[in-house]
Length: 463
Ligand SMILES: [Zn+2]
Image (cartoon, rainbow, N blue to C red):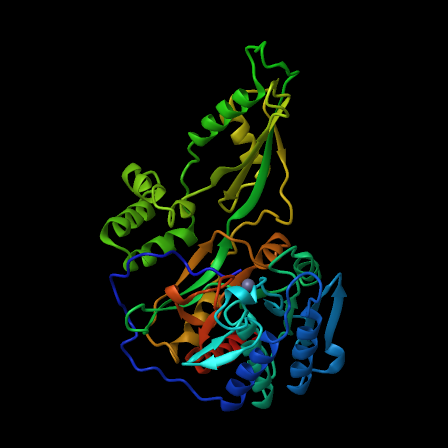
């Protein structure tokens, strides 16, 4: 999972006037790119021939060569995949660990649809091409290379540094859940697969950086109406399809109360600077007053912002009837919800049932592979560490929090009570983010500042 904020017209270019000061770390930079290419060549896609275990072996070899004790790097097979947990013991065993979280699997890519083979890494024209170049093999190898560099520099962390990679983040998240269960005592989880930097579309200059501190909760609710049925030549007053359709229309018209959290307020205020005047004005007005009707109308009508102002639910599937000439005995629909952090799915389902105003419509939570999560706290030590880490390579770049509408491994950590923050080191243009899509690529100019960033961030967070 990787999503970079919303699309929108960029009307302001802020900051970044000071010149960047990137300390070169040639060995780590070369290692990150080399390892990323080797990892991309391993087709770590769920199903037959899944090479995630080989990615784990590649990463383990690099970590051990970089100074990790062999016994401190464990690879555990699960079904056709595997996960990796490596520990760098800190000086004070009483402190909770810093956990660096990533994944090794990638979304399927069909070679016939790509310009180049997705599993043959290519560096060309300043880009690393291949499935996983953005999501998230380069992120992973940057972190591995940075840890090796820290060891060469003689750094000794006070708290344990644990780096872990799940093996099925893009599909079932079985290993993600296992890992979060084992590492729920983390002081802080740094998810290197979330949020990150954005480059200006025209100039390519660094524009802003977001860290992800919350995700909406995914839920599926099944609605069912049953009826004795009968011959279609003898209609009854109540028809299962009609009854379900009427309930769905009432749900469509049900307004969820718009909401604002500390985190989304900060996002609205900062992100407004990069939007067209109408959207920007609504974002600022909503941040000042989440009951502002005019602002709500503008933001609710925009697919890029509707999910930011509260819970959304929409019907996604429908099924009913069993014969062309029979009264339907059964009609079902799926309502997919993206729940604003802080609400239990059961409460949202109850709200939908109340909106349906028909006790004959049955509701059932049929969500698979997702758990409810609240936002992580806006921890000042984390925010300060990110700002410090970006100050050298990206001086003056605005840094602000974001809530994403998709789920990542952070969901499992937050559910287990561990604060988790997405803060990838990559800077990419919004138009060039092809995560999960065709011809995925990442500018390699992002590598030296990324190493710089991780060296600073990991040092500060493991103190
Ligand atoms: Zn990802």
